Length: 189
Figure 1 (tube, rainbow, N blue to C red):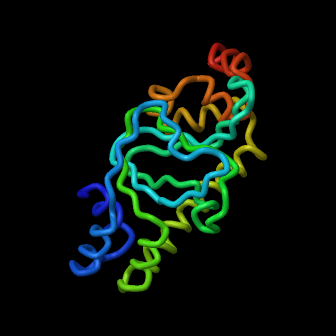
Figure 2: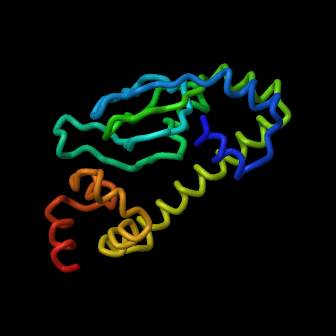
Figure 3: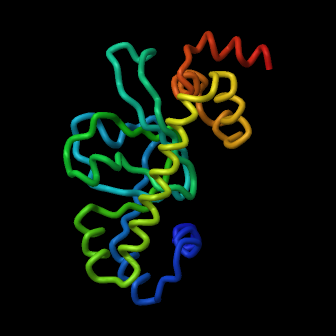
């Protein structure tokens, strides 16, 4: 609970009463390495804070080598199939723990309670949504403006832990190249 408190304290000051109400709604979930904890066509009912672990978002394909990885989340970040969570409609992608992962999760209905019954709930929700949007926007701009080599170097500089914990096949998919192309980029560098 300390980690999520530290994270949220960076966003806003939370009263003890609001904090107690919010934490009463949190559920700790432990997800085993390689487990898919949201499958395609399921409705996302949780937004979760990662206490430990690495999670990826991906579009499955019949041939696992063709899966499209489009996002990662790490310790001290939020994770959700956020579009499905907001709309309460089936997800078009899956969410998988790449390592043993510990989450603090809140359900959709419990989060609505937090919004309605705390002074700070709506502000935290809005600011968290804004941060998720900025991450997504930066990624889209990188895919449009940077070369594959530049995207790899940026990833390497911004997230060195990614390269240690995530298989290269997922990284190559994330930056939009084949595994062979990533191998050539790595050799050049």
